Image 1 (cartoon, rainbow, N blue to C red):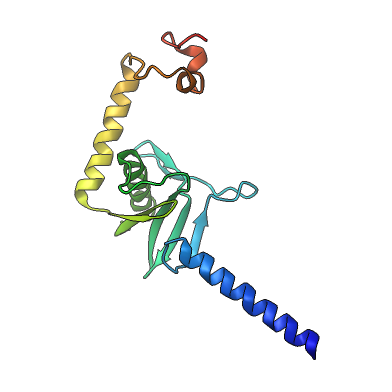
Image 2 (image 1 turned 180 degrees about the vertical axis):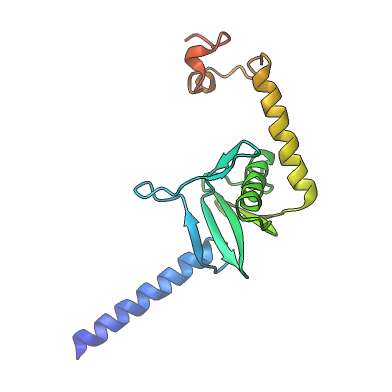
Amino acid sequence: MTVGLALILLALIALISALRLRAATGLPWAPVVYHDADAWTPERPLVARRLGLVGKPDYLIQMRGRLIPVEVKPGRNAAHPYESDLMQLAAYCVLIEETTGVAPPYGLLRYAERTFRLSYTTRVREEVLTLLDEMRNALDNDCDRSHDDPARCWGCGFFSQCDQAMSG
């Protein structure tokens, strides 16, 4: 009987620890229907061929029958979200709308100690579409290197082909 009681006590401790950990994430209690956090079983990307947009949010949760994208940046600790992170999250909102036909009401951006909520509005969608157009135009034109950081330059995926690459 003492072994059974000990197992029940351990199970209770494990449950309390799991609940505290879940609460510490800052995310809502909702079913996770997609996740790209497991390297062993990666999810397929969301694809909007019409827009030429592809992406893999960290999570999609379901709240009141709607899909909500969640992007997690555990290394960030900022009082305000970075604009680039918000645009990444907004792009996931566009992808959900394009692939399911139903726009998410918002997206969630989780930093190390804080969760930000991005309302997905018509204006936000237009910002993403404008940014996509600007990026396509930049690819069609010659772009100058936009930094003086050798480490950043050497880590770039275009380093070997770039005529402005910084030498070491």
